[in-house]
Length: 288
Image (cartoon, rainbow, N blue to C red):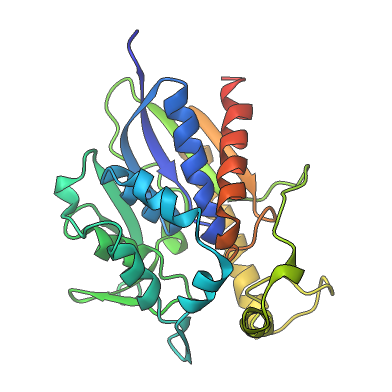
């Protein structure tokens, strides 16, 4: 039986992007062959790891990614350029996956970033894999921008949150989009680690994140401060860009997870998030 070939597009979403692993596994389990991948932010990371043929190594690492490791990798800068430098986590990742040339990936791959100097979308489909990933994950104001050549690069979602028009697609390929930051209601429970299991030093870091509204929204739903005003505005922009992309390019299969399912920094929920991604894929593929 001939496998159905898939051109896969992966959105951003911080820790929610780990769900892309579950989606990919479910597609392969059902006999789909992923022949190309494009992504932004966390989608660029998962897509890049997959394109390089290192998904198993990455999954093994991320699923034992405990809370202590998460907090140890948070190199806070609290500078005018960003709250996190992002160097520690990239160094950790480079210990897992070699920084190969994109041309040497097993399937065509591209990451999307945004150049602050020109205010234009940048398609990174050549050069070093981790340069592309580092550029695409630079979500302002969380991560500092990444300098590449003469460009000052930040998160690709600012210009193209769901790059359906950038993935390499051959005749007959099924266009599959995965949006893990979708503006859809939460209709079921997403299991999470009980916060009481956190150690004292971890809670201290968590309180820093809360101060900047990075861990979870305030119980006061409409409380406004500088950072949550910025992040909520950016989120709305991302969702509108994704919706416009879906309307314009009409993927054959659209798999979505609600933005309120998991927080962007809940990486220690990796196993649960992977399962949630697989379940979201199953629900859609059963109807396909």
